[in-house]
Amino acid sequence: MTNKKRKISILGSTGSIGRQALEVIEKLQDRFEIIALTAGSNYELLNKQITKFKPKYAYCNSPENIVGAKYLPLDEICSNQENDIILVAVSGKIGLKPTLKAIQNGIDIALANKETLVMAGDIVMQKAKQAGVKIIPVDSEHCAIHQCIKDISQVEKLIITASGGPFLRKTIQEIKQATVKEALAHPRWNMGKKITVDSATLMNKGLEVIEAHHLFNMPYDKIDVVIHPQSIVHSAIEYKDGSVIAQLGLPSMHIPIQYAITYPERFEGIKSKSFSFSEIAHLDFEKPDLDKFPTLNLAFNAGKTGGSATVCLNAANEEAVFAFLNEKINLFDIYTITEKIVSEHDVIKNPNIDEIFDIDKEIRIKTNELIK
Ligand code: MG
Image 1 (cartoon, protein in one colour):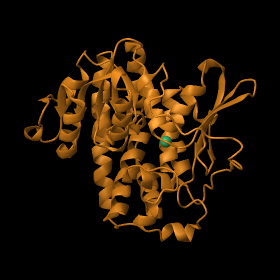
Image 2: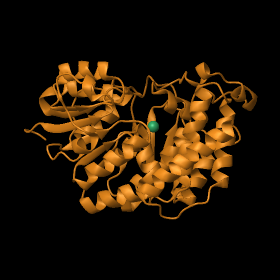
Image 3: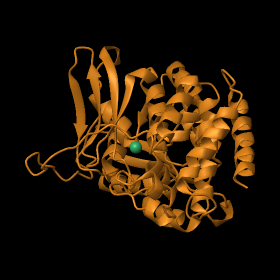
Image 4: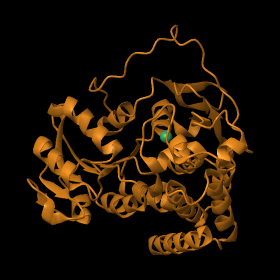
């Protein structure tokens, strides 16, 4: 990467991660060339980005509205050999097929889409390994772990930190009565709505445990979750000799995004504000309260079950989160509904991609029937 510009496409450039990635690239203009930008329905912002960053290609749901770049279907963007790396920053299951396409074409992935690994981690990691494709995590916890690991075979345990979200100090009663506004007021991170609700229930951490299991090939009983309200320690690993290595910094998504798209190099780019050990009075850690946040265990168990269980977990949870955002159910019902759907699911051991999408669809219908 030193002399040559790295060629990148961003799937989901108008979302929270996509916009921050473009801020990083703006600072590192001489190091990146953008091949393609893609959006869903927000073609207005996409067109502004096209004017500013001049990608060759673009994709959105309404191709006729694209101005200034050539329309290319997602599949073709992901198989375009001009790409050195593709940042998958779309949210939801639409990230899975393009990611597989890029892997199949030997293109490295900076992965910000959780569903890709939660729904099809076994398939994705196996295909990446076969193709010699790097999957570099953007999620701050996994990015932290990626930075800590020198040799995965010497790692005994992963320790994933969680801020605990806005309801950390609330009672179960208060959580049940929580409004959408309260759930969306995350104390540390500014993110999209779905992931912010997932952070409030700790489902986000559960999905991250499943992600970590796949990314680092780590058994579930060697993954710990610890609550750390200040979000300074982004995660840690324990080596076989008991040494713990952690990655620290002030919370900012620019840093993991920048790390992932510039890996294995590091640049100033958007530099994190230096944080001073002496200015931070103390760092707190505590065990997650599984009575208040039972979704975390639900996710661990689905992960241990494996196969289609995590597909079911993800689909039921997402539909329940949408129902909460539409004020049809309360926050705690997200757990109750997801738990019921997961417990009734007949697990398929090694589902293929078509089966994964079929199960996803079927579970979403079932979940919405239950919500009614
Ligand atoms: Mg995270």
